[in-house]
Image 1 (tube, rainbow, N blue to C red):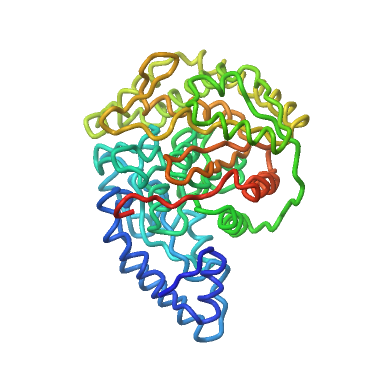
Image 2: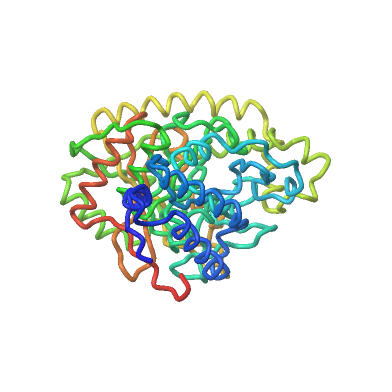
Length: 446
């Protein structure tokens, strides 16, 4: 069976009757069965329900009924999206035996209504607190480009599943960088949309002030297609907006491998290098809000069932619960100030560009990387460049630098709220110039 390259083409082939949804879904199921053991991206393979849903799509096509713009396209979700009939565990032993969900998360419902077929749920850092997808219950998700390295987190299972070709797209969540970090380390497109633009109904919470959800894809075309389905919007932009490259904080500890790509981007777009004021303070404030809100959310369980938490997550939540409320109030007050400053900068430069991670994927046997001459924890510090941007609630598209044969690196493209179409337009410009794009892993089994 030859499956079309883009998601839109897959759905078109199913809708026309030239490619059965059942065959496409079965190929995804088979790929998961054979390839997932090497990377540990998938926690639950939903083979039976996926086959049933694919058969329903094929039956609609046979009756001349259009199943929708994602007809028969397989997808996966991070382990914190509600799936009807299964417990929503958020990757934690704490919730492993909770009651089954009575309905799908709203965004999952939207995708299914458009004809997409859910085939799997994916590994994550427990309770979404981490940047490496090292899970005490499900194990470590490995990078498809080099299985001795991390896939990033906390949505690492979703990213690895897409990068390895197990599914065409997957959903993740992003509070402080949990889509953008694994997208960068796994060479994908990953969207953290405008805060509040997608419904969080049925998504296990972490930090209410910062939580967002979004997709991973292997191409920009696929990203735009999935985004349109999720939002019901067909807004497009053909402009090539003025851009600027963020230096200062966003050059701290930056791997030298970024340099030629940023130089080429500057030459291509005329983008100057500028500084985002208070980026370091924004990251510190984001840490405070994350710790306090996360600790508050789980405080009851921390008091009564602390042994069931992932130890690395439990200690950070306990520390957050102990922080003084005055620190939290100051962080919240600063959030609005920082956001206003970033929006003013975006008025002068409608697109801001920054690295998504300081380094390529760190090794699993040495879960650190060098920052200012010191080894720092990858689990905590891989969000060095993503956290200040999350703090402002603006949309960010992580795009993969075109580096065939090398470990992936990604850039963040940043725009004003509601300007996702502008991000896509700028990314198309970079893709057409050969600066960004997906390069398939060359690792055996991926």
